[in-house]
Image (tube, rainbow, N blue to C red):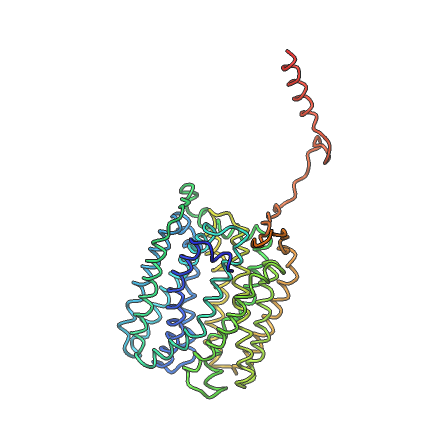
Length: 447
């Protein structure tokens, strides 16, 4: 990761994202705790995360919109708009105002989708192909590392100064990110043209995902795991309340512990991509979530800490594998649409599972739901592992003394093998037309 952080453009982007990711890590869990305190309901607290994910159904339209504008200016404006969208949280006072929290969470989910699509294209524009895993790994390391202090700080700030004050932290973070990235000086790659309009242009991302074998398999496997991963958004509150007999704010402690695992997973993820390929890394991340969920079925704090650590390791492996795969297997002009479409394909089942988890946690024993989550995610990881040959580890060239290792970019194989024409020569032979051209050239020279 040191090699990619030595690049001035990426380092400046990294600093800007550090501000917005810090605000995000402090704010999101605090919103769920805020709803829990206002309503006393575990299901309604978990439904806050559902509100964030629900706008993913608009992903194809969002990606089409993002691809029509230059990456950096669009990213700056999107951060400023996000800061404005958080401002209604200043009005929340009691249980009757919970709808404002849900509305802001839904708008933030739409903004998050927009920022992710723009960021993916901006990273691809700033970073060479052979350093994409390192760039994604660096961002995921910081994102997960912030869990060490962000959620705990958010829970502590919420308990001390209340929810509305936390909204000010979020606004400040996104405004700072816009200011830092706005000062970035880079060559802007403008869209080649308006491109296809509705509906062909909107669905281009989904068509690319369906036509590229590695992306198709990755999204199917990860989507299968997401069908149950969302249960944990509500189950973790039941685990703390019913299993550990602790206050809801203790969830912030567990998420901080998860950040330690996320920090380890983020640091290791570029190396895992080099050794296992993108699909192999994604499979490893999804499979690691299974034993973690199984362990949480037994309410013991020591076992729970180990489980949350393992879950933390799984998250950056999953995201780095998927993001790097998308960036390497997608033309830049489609990157916004493909990134947004992949978010929808994964987050759609996850949104359903979060909603189902919020309902099921009140009707079934949370331990049975953790067992179901563990079994399904292990099966999804195995399904992905059998497809790791679609993205084999990239060959490396031996670098010179003091030079960073550089990988040879892989070129995706064509979707359908082309059949040689009957008159095509075999490999190693010359084409008859070539002899005729050479003979004509010699005759002209002799004249």
